[in-house]
Length: 410
Image (cartoon, rainbow, N blue to C red; front, side, top):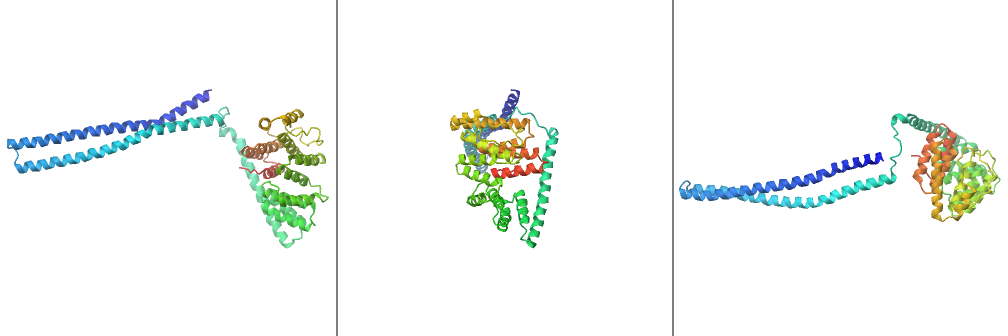
């Protein structure tokens, strides 16, 4: 409560500081106008008395006719000048009056701005958060700086590798593994469009091998902001007919189903993928999280259908229970969204308490994108990169997920 009292007092002080000159200048202008008008009227009265005095001086013989005419001309000139000054002052007064009429409007508009600011802060502000002085954030700042340095060093090394590979492939264009490595390096640098060329060359030289088709399809999808277009889907469907066991094939085909509105088919494909995967597959938690989120969002019961166990299940945040799934299936779309928002909020709170959970951060990124909050997803991505800045493998996984979801680091 104290913070609100302080903020209210500060707002009143600032409002008074802004509004006081408006009223003060209004009163000052009015007083100055009145004082000036009174002074000119006194001058006119004096000049009229001087004209009458000239006539009396002629009668007394004090002034000759020529002297009286000269004096009368000078006094009349002064009267005329004073009349002109009165006319200008009257026009200035009218203009000041018009401006004065606007002052209440300006004051009201200013007060509305302050009220709007207070309302916006009441809605978005977090006065309950603790202060975070620079001195107390040294470790965090150093970690962020170290992450930035690591990224810069990694990118520099990858750029050198790309240049060396490109030069070698000019001399030996039939080096299949060289094209694969070049494509992978370009993908790591976020240059998916260039990686397409390398992977496509690998596809041709390998006789359209399914693994290379999957790599090529992924580069196309990443270059297309995570959307599975016709080119990528064609490559994936061709790869699915081969003997390739690359998990990207079924995962991205499921993603294509989901993007086309057939979430049930996507979930079926992903469940079949995880159930046939080795238990130590590094990508398993990511796909499991995707299944849970899609099933919850659509109210689809997947209880008992998943037999796979992710390698990090002990540390990953709990997914929706059977009761959650059954309840979601009976909810209206609005109630289901409220339930999802609550679960996402709980996940974010758990990660704030226990940030050493890469799978949790990945799920939070996906969850924010599912509920249409890309800014929060980007913030979760940045926080995860800082938290695991010394783990290149995790950084690559986060970067790949960010590309897939269509988010980028700030």
